[in-house]
Image (tube, rainbow, N blue to C red; front, side, top):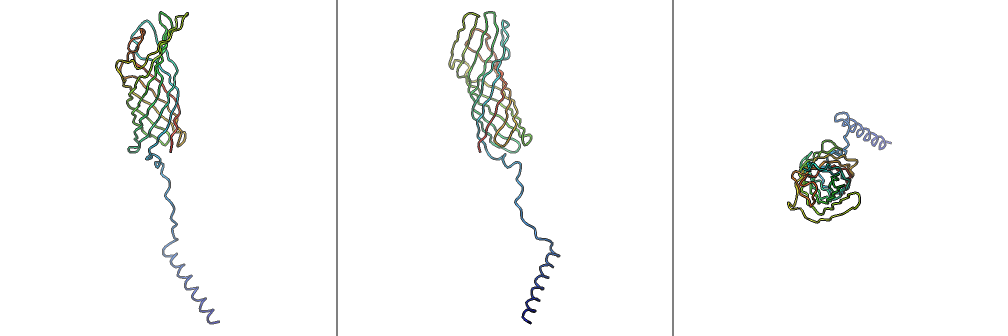
Length: 221
């Protein structure tokens, strides 16, 4: 009986000691993992693909015999997002892009469709978790051109390949993108030639391309 009372007394002393520690030092804190930062994904370089629609026309065709209208083409290619320091990242791309215009002339209808390899070199500003602003230069390399003449009776096509005398063309780009989720974005931008380019055609002479683009981008982890 004495042994049982002795053990019971020891248990009371231990319980009292633990209770006293809780009273003086407060409840024991449980370590929890830190909350996920909304900027965690920003510092991960991303590679992706994109595709979309081009609405192309010209600026300053320098010929009063006709007015130009828009044509519809497409763009597709690779995208990169290389973080610098929040909220700025570098966003170069390599795109295949269709440009050109339609014109009503004194000799009939004329359409020019040109294919380019565009390399935008853009600064990307992450203005919110889902909204981005992009601006920068673009270098455009002509690949081929198709001119279509329609005088109401006969339709004639002319094809040209790498025939630009001035080689690459410098463009300006401004645009926005909306992150639909971590891997998909909606893109919209405007590009314009910063210098005249000369085509193989008797219509229009030198002019500058302007293109409105809208499309989707898909990023890989």
